[in-house]
Length: 390
Image (cartoon, rainbow, N blue to C red; front, side):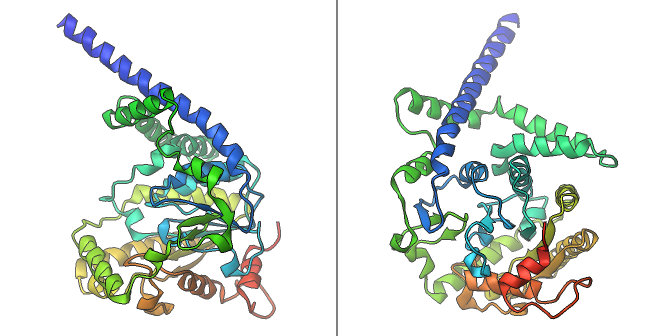
């Protein structure tokens, strides 16, 4: 028994050591990455692959960009939104959206913006229904867990926010478990092997792209790329799918959704409230929307009483929270409410920038109750009127 215990302890120590070394090497790699990321300028794009480690990119970009007036937070469904679409000049806008976003991702990015003195005037939130579902496994944000913990530590010291220390312990436990994770171990071994052999680390396609594939935007051709404002340009093959292909994919996504046990997670909603309260305390105006579904997907979802009720519950919860925070809110889940037709979808889930612009336009079309004078007439004026001056 004693021999078994010693062997087990030795193996655990080995796993922790390997994972720890890989994490240290990753931080060293990030310092080089940040220096290169600082060189991406307005009018330039970085050619990327579908395997882009977008959290890694955002983490370093948010430490080098100028302070934006407007920041977008959300999932890949918000990635195409650009500053130009809102008539904002370069430097006024930044898009932090990442693929498969959890509510913890904007917490981490907000913490980086605060830390660097880059607090925006306006935060635009695209909130996916699935981000509030208990059944949705959300683990990608763990790459940013140190920033989430830092945020929770900060708000936990504020009066009346007694729940934050408990949440901090939860995040710390999640990070601690990573040191013993077999999945993390496999990735760590691969990273260390590449480092020893002088080859690129996993996720280093971003670093290589910054070195070799930063080009003027008009030379992007048919490739996928990231603009200096964080927004995404889809490759031509993806952006030019025919309507029937898109409709079939939308139906598949809806069928998959209908099989999900979509019960709202109140804990995740509480984390969102912590984030929004801190933003409001820093003078940030909030603009919030639920993104549109493809018309074919929306019709199937609405025909299912259970799914329709679940979406209505989460929409009502976000709307109520937005009202408490003094945020502008619009539920754009129904594409006809904008309207965004089937031709406005790249695929079964992601909408084109024209639809996103229309959503924001409608959100900002009505002046705030405390704002006198005529209604603003352009996206640029409406955005600035929403945010006011700092």
